[in-house]
Image 1: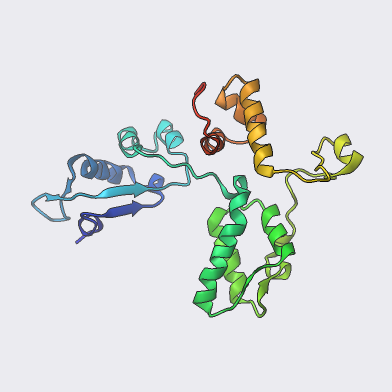
Image 2: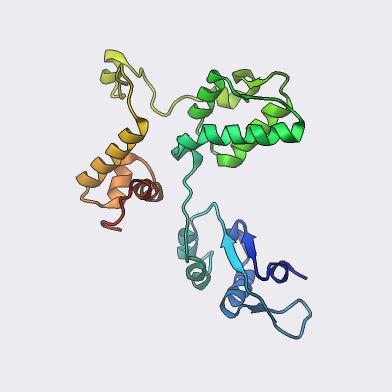
Length: 240
């Protein structure tokens, strides 16, 4: 039995769907449309009822426009699209994910690590994570595997993470911050989430809800802007 036959009545997950060969894309489309397939060398169709979940780290719409992904399959798969922005654009998830992986690798390696030291947490938050969650997972796996203490410290992290600098360079406080155009943190602190929401609203107001122009003002992708708008309960406007 193949995977579709085994998944009958359940769910099949197809990772990195953009890498599928064109001829296999046509076969997958047939399975979706007809809810049936034929085994290699078989002579009869087998009916299946399967929920299909796919994922890709590429922009499937761009792949479709470039002719690298079948248009008919693209629209057949695009029933409930879920956007997951890169980790660098959702820093609020970094520490909770790190704590989760500490628990996972504690069990796997029989360790008793209780968490992150403050300097290690700050280093993780500064790093841009080009490898996204997989990279974070690998970093924590290495740290826990080699850990002899009870806390992950800065010395337990790879050099490239320790050497990372925040995206906005320059002084963060005082007159030097204003002179360099950097945002000055008020002495009493602020809510980062509220600040982000306010900036999103301002960008949408300035562009009259044009999401493409608003995302350019904020220096993020349009998909990332839409992700934030969904979190804020703001959707609609010019889709151009």
